[in-house]
Image (cartoon, rainbow, N blue to C red; front, top):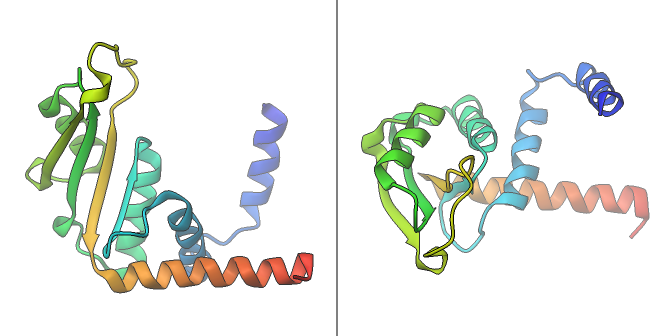
Length: 153
């Protein structure tokens, strides 16, 4: 574990995290792996607050997105308290609790206990389809260009 962490730190040392191109590429690659492309909006859902904090930081930094306009929805297990989970996610993401709307309780989980560390899935909705389209194109074109260079196909 320590060796892997040290190797990761070494890699991170040579990456300029103030470079907008690098930040946008990182967001695009994350975006293509983490979101549904069926919705026509820029959004991301995750059970990991770190992923969503990164998403929000990049929306603000790269696109000057007003974080007060963020809307959130929760997908929870049947035994989770919606008010409690809204408070958790509101605090974690620094998004006003009034920005949390729809909560879905998964009826398939009735009768099964939720692990204490699991806080459901929070979906952060930003609207703006232009950003979504750019991120998808960027990630796809980068992947294709990289594949062509390193695999020749």
